[in-house]
Length: 225
Image (cartoon, rainbow, N blue to C red):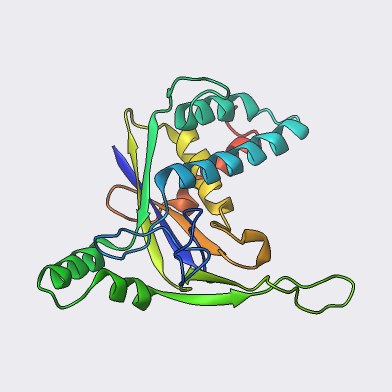
């Protein structure tokens, strides 16, 4: 079974690869060198979802929620058992890529020699510059100027979720909650970059976020337990 996460950037974002390009940028975005198309790694996206899941379960534990045990089982199904060295998760998170139609069009143009990967990357990104400011004087610190490439706001990405076994309603409810709580990604999340809106889609790419959240609300309210 397959589901999807649809992501729309609400501010510029840097899905960084931890390095820069000499003479160009100090922080480069993750992108396919063959096409220039930026993306977010599946492992990174899964880590963000796991973080949101932990926050949700912690909040339920603090409230002594009767739904906690069922949602902990759902979390194990989705992400595996905490602390386990085995990848026992039934959900596998793929990279968040630009829409398939755009990717195919870009690849075709590159094959025909009408575009280069560098031109593609430049059309979807911009380079921002920032400096560190001294707390005492409020003046820019010498030598602190950094250049950062960002993916432009309103860019959309889609990540595929592949399941070894069909998730039950509890797992879908928890997953939708994690997706909805996903508000930021990438480097500079605490400095205004990487704001996003995420939605959960079914195998036909229909938005099922609200439908799944309704089941989550019923669980939390104790209905049907």
